[in-house]
Image (cartoon, rainbow, N blue to C red; front, side, top):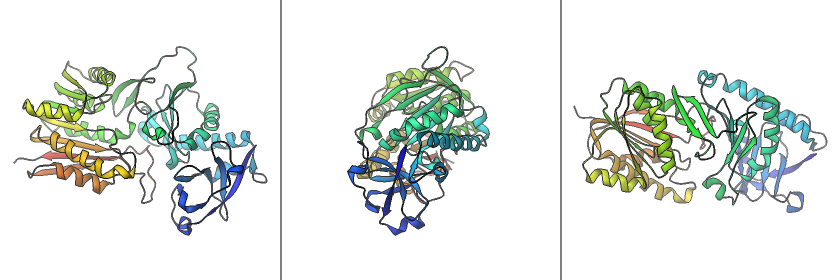
Length: 407
């Protein structure tokens, strides 16, 4: 049986602000004796019908769960079986909702975007041949075994866990890459799927995050449409990872491309994805190492490009490093834009939720020269990466398409 503890909220604003998170300074904390070894418990907020997972050691003390999960509570207890069954029903509804996106029929998509989809700290991506789960917090680790059992009742696919990255290190949590439910036949780590009309491949045991950056779907499609009307001959892909941006360029017929990444394996993967999406044989140059050093080297050798994409990892994982991250975005933009030909296109991205849209645009603008730079398009995260209708950080992905206009 799972016990549901009662907890008080200090901050009365919570009642009027529909956030999935309640922070440490907003709650009356529970005594350690009531909690498990990880200081985690299911809780109900006193005076409300709201339930969640409480983690005493986290800055985010309570992550809310859907109320429907607790319809079978009896005297502040719910059986593990009932909890799993309710999760199964909720997952079935969530799966049906995500299938309303036309791309979800044939392309990889995000089934659960963590807290925004009611499953705290758990990202679940459906690659059609395998589900990949990432837990980003101790709360996600608490929920994981229950959600796995619920998934097995709903979706009959192999399940792979990729709980890795800096965000787990912030909570001193170990990294995990493992099969939770192995394939019935061959246990291959190689995955091939569709994304933004591309055929993309990656390896489960070597990938970043859950495998591919599915949140860039709409922006990749926009680039594909844009390239139809531009005479792009040469491209530069900064922090290329699996090569999705360059694969779009190759699909459009661009024959000369340069990729920069600090991961040698990722550069090999990117080349594979470029080739399998090109009808020709493009010339591919790969530069392994620090992007700033390579950008400076390209400047010294007087290289120029018609299309430059800068899609780096988040420069900050916490608010205390925002100023440093903004300087890094400015430096990246300054070095990249000097390599752009007249009337070329510069795409700059940020996936840091701690830097808002205005701050990112200001950082990018500071890196641009005084020439006539035109904002062609403001991108967004794929709708399967759920955004809440609240003024919080759920809209984390920033993507600007900028033209160096010379009339």
